[in-house]
Length: 115
Image (cartoon, rainbow, N blue to C red):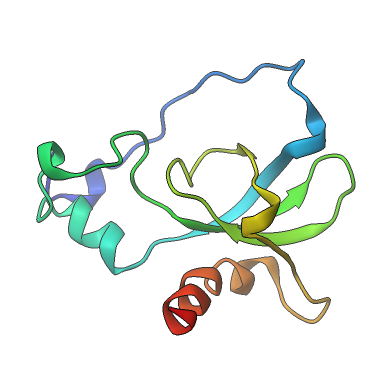
């Protein structure tokens, strides 16, 4: 139901166990920002919104499946799944003194400041 955050729910998606794990990360945290809340409250109509697939969630913190490295990044769509095929140009290592939880909130703030 549009406009009611209590109606948000998880949906099971497709995951191929044979997928190339070289470019795969396991999402730990995803931040919701102002755009996500405005969209969830129905202030941005679906028919006018460009990213139909899992539109909520652009920034995340995660673990690289192959190496175990802690990384944070942004993704243009589908930021809420458990696993993401990542683009290394949009990924940063997380410093040891920064938690995964806090790291998920930084990428969009950085991009906004940089822009």
